[in-house]
Amino acid sequence: MESPVGHLKYRASEIVVYRAAGRRHFRGLRVPLCVLCFFLCVLVSAAAAQVRRPRAEVTALVGHAAHPGESVQAALKVALPDGLHTQSNKPRDETLIPTELTIDAPQGVTVKEIVWPPATDLKQAGVEKPLAVFEQTFAIGVELALAPSVPAGELAVPARLRYQACDATLCYPPANADVTW
Image 1 (cartoon, rainbow, N blue to C red):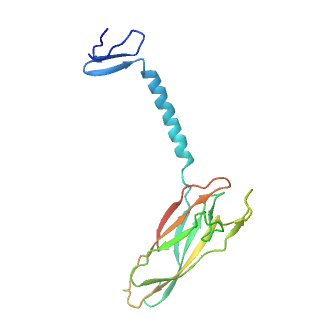
Image 2: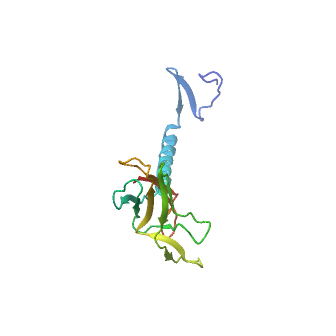
């Protein structure tokens, strides 16, 4: 028997394709397609939950107001969620992702020094050397020098902290935190 579509042939036991009001209908596939879509949505949401990046709370701090020709002490306070750590700025294993601070100093501002906190040793099962990590809350110190030619007034110094949060069994994708002093 020829189908109403014109070029398809079907038997009574097969899925019926027919044209009604200008649309094709797939009788017999609605329920299986709905079930398949439901399970795909569940799988996608479960996968998304697995790779959610835990975020550190990063705060830019300045010691005092500086004037042209002076230096100023600044810091980044980093607070990690409970149970997480990041690799230090100098991990012992070169395959690990270090914590990095990039400062985009405007004209007339020089980064004199970045002072990293001491790393904590973290022993892991099956690993000979302990990891050098930062845990809980830590601060990264920065000394900035202002040239005498810098105009008086407020000056924004943007920076980006790149880190990879890990727990005892899993490291999450690296994240960036943009801040401005």
